[in-house]
Image 1: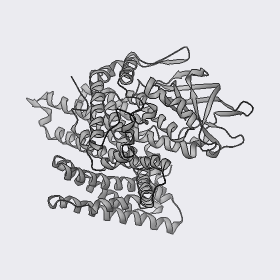
Image 2: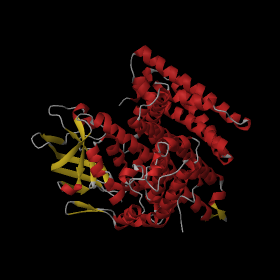
Image 3: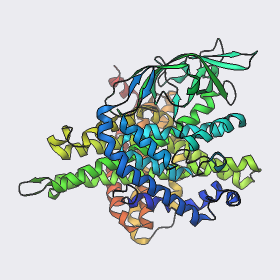
Image 4: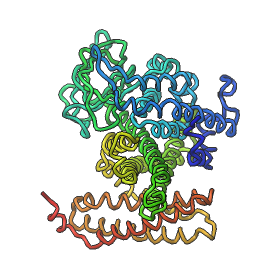
Length: 572
């Protein structure tokens, strides 16, 4: 029997990270639930044991139900019947299995019948699910919406809706995008009208490109303030499918993630509940929602990378050419090794980011119950700042890596990979969307450049640099220090040109290069830290740093030799 958790020691390795003790203690609020719930952990070790058992269940379902269904789901896809979505047979079977196993509402508090899991084990489950079927992750992973309801909705809404996730396996959706409002969500026009006499809201308008659009519970961004045209006029609403005031106009025909229904929706006098305060929909709530979604896309990208790497490795061992398996040829084994190194680097970045998110969100919960002391408030601010700059970096890196790894995997398959006889053809198509939705790679750079300009990346790099290291690995740190020096000079050069010209265009032009330079240094240190805990990561750390050193040097030289006038030759 296949198990996608037990056969992946890298995931279990990250579950044992030293910061997990702090995360668990904060999340469990010193284990106060053990008196009320018989499934609440007694201590850190008991919590880790619980995470392992649940991930083993997810791994079993993924290996024996979801992955075997993936090809039929891709071929069949969902359909619209009587204005509503019907999942492919395999998709429904997948979801039913996870609902039965209690895998919906994993991170919700136990008072809502959730498992009260931190983000880290939940994201691990998302990676495992994505390895089995990237398209299905979009349906299962949208339980993230429950976190937004839990964080921002009124107690009345929480009590009415949150239990439906864990108890009844409610599906969810984020209804944000419209025909004329894609990346620019400030342009959203779907109208929310308030009936003051009856204290009720209703929604009217169209949403497009909505993942899992016909969900049981939807979070809808709508314009609640008449006469406005920007983000300050938008609020967030909860729509309940049971009111039956929404029609699915169509399901988009897509290149990949075919099992996930991407819908065009029509709201007609649809009753809705306001989440939080008016006018804070985009400014606060959707920003939080999308950060969670981007972390989820990071997990999806890593899972797809893992699937693509495994397909390439297995094929290269079996495929015979010129009397020997192709894995024996340098051109192939170098590609495979580079794929593995990128996979381990993006995975380390994924779980570092998830840990940062976990710490600051756990402090938020503590802060609702008692006043945080000064040290705790400072710690909360530190981890929130890190989560804010690491999340777009993760989304950028992991989505680009998943595309590169899927591309190389298909290349190793040769002509066979281009045929539907092998899973890599589907994985390759599924990976492509990761660098597009929930903010394109270009938009992630816009968000991540703040980590460069504010010095947040550099400050954290210096913290990594100052950590104690075994003498035998000091040569890796020396190379990373050289890369850091080159990065600092590049940042200074861009800053100096900007100040001289009073124009951010030069910074915008080099933003991706600077962000990628920072990302390479950060992932280099993360792999070194992994090596300190397990020497099996040494080769990956060495290869990644060597290649990143060359890549960063090329970027540094390009930046050093460029000036504002050079931008003119690129303009169309």
